[in-house]
Length: 256
Image: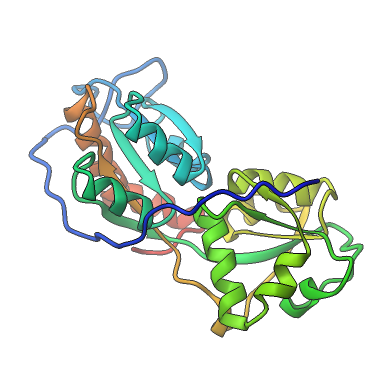
């Protein structure tokens, strides 16, 4: 497979508190909702790592999951969206600077891990093994938070050149990395622990040393041009509520 690296999104962090003057926490839609149903179901653009947990918090919104960088570009280009949830502070900060979203809120943290296929045919047991000649490594593209985080690991450990030489594919989101490693198309890959846990039985997790771990965090914000502002605010409230946070913890996400 040939690599198709992408440009990274803009940098910067905007972790600012947010207050919504909305009493209802639910949304109406074709599937059941946990809220009151008094606000129209919003369209939520969210990182692929949230694809299993967000519908558990509220099944009613119209979801579109993918790489945070690609979703941010869609918002910039005017795609219909009411809420943006990213697996990094960078993309929300860039959209905030352009006046496209409200103040982003940190709602969860995650953890990057190294995964290998079941059976571990390349016999990878530590992070240093990914630099060995012939190892096939897959990571996310640089514009995707999981790819940015992986590159931070390489930098922190001083193995950037050796690791990048072994990268055979740069995926558009973390779910593609999971699939490629699970199918044996790569010897190892970097994903979030929440995605690795969801693929139990197909992947083996190798934890990263403390000095390699990047700070991973998820942010959420209301899109200013969204057509369903009350529903968007209600959804953010659901995610930040005690119930929403408990569902995120159960899925393996850390506290914000």
